[in-house]
Amino acid sequence: MEEFSKNTLQQIKKENIKPIPKWQFLLKDSLVWGLFVLNLIFGSIGFAISLYLLSNNDVLSDSSLVTNVWEWLILAIPLAWILLTTLFVFIAYYNFKHTSGGYRFTVVKIFLMNIVVSIVLGIVINGLGLSQKLNTIFSDNIPFYNHTMDLRSEVWMRAESGYLAGTIVDIDSDTKILKIEDLNGKTWDIPYQDATVKGRVVLELGEEIKIVGKMVSDKVFEASEIRPWVGNGRQMQENS
Figure: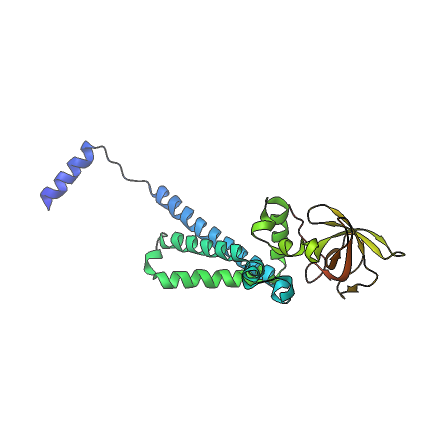
């Protein structure tokens, strides 16, 4: 043992090996913990937005909006957000496993902890209404978001099939015609004299609505039913 220690010391001197400063270990551990917390937060946001999209998706309650099971699955379930949430939870698990003390926990315990925390925080975020605001921010600033993450616009931008959505930009109470700007920025005239207006809808400028009816021409869509875009009828993300 003495000979081994002597040889080791000689090797250290020969190769000029120096001990790694303690602050580097602390910095590395702090970085790993930071990544763990960050991915846990991202996972919680992903779960919250998934809850928001599920609770505000008409496809779940109105099967007439789709024509087959495959279309229902794609448009009703926010699969992209669920997959993204799962990815963040997995990365959080990986980071936690590499923290000091992380080796003491089994894989199952780490996964369960990450999942439970993400679900609880996600429910809180959604309950506070932050998921709706975050979804709107993402929609306004991320190209193609509505075509990949929030597919409600895919459901309600099918005028030829009898579905349209947009924001009221003008109202003629005498002729009972609304003018809306749809999710793609196109302006439509909406006769609504025979339409059923859902109770949460307020027909006023800036109101964001979904319309069931029929396409009369390339700029006229006759409404048979007017619904709010979301539960409170006040928030809608615009198609980027």
